[in-house]
Amino acid sequence: LTADAVARGAKVLTGGERLDRPGYYFAPTVLIDVPEDAELMSEEPFGPLAPIVPFSDLDQALATANALPYGLAAYGFTDSAATAEKLSEELEAGILSLNHCGGSVHEAPSGGVKDSGYGREGGPEALDAYLVTKRVSHLLAP
Image 1 (cartoon, one colour):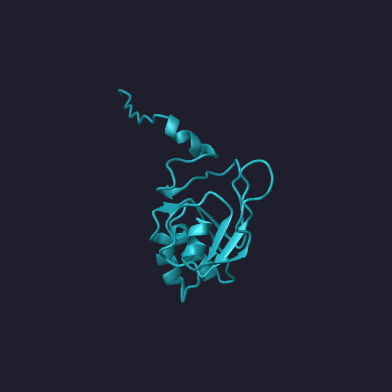
Image 2 (tube, one colour):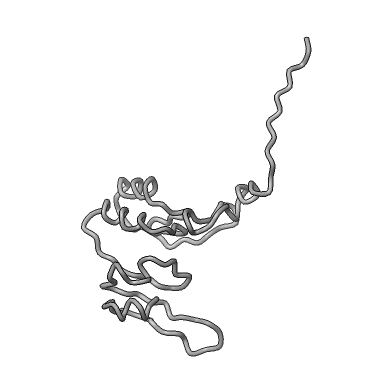
């Protein structure tokens, strides 16, 4: 994804290469000037890739993010409570961290939306897929 973005005009600010050690490690990578037609803008990278994409207003940023078929995790940074609320309500992601890069915790449900997965892991919601709920209505005779 990084090579494709660079071939299409993106610039690497940091990282951009495999690390020289055993295993499949890739340096955390930040890219700028990533064109909309780069694979990175339409694929879900499971790696430390951060494309920096400028936008003119929050509605444009939401439209760009929500146009993707994926929605595992999203991050927003703002000092505005109204912006944080709008992101919480409108951003199509299963996990949203505001003003930090939070990870998952066992006590809370975690999972994606759209093509990023089904169901949840963590928290009591993770058990829902394994349960069959039965509604019973029982009227006792007088």
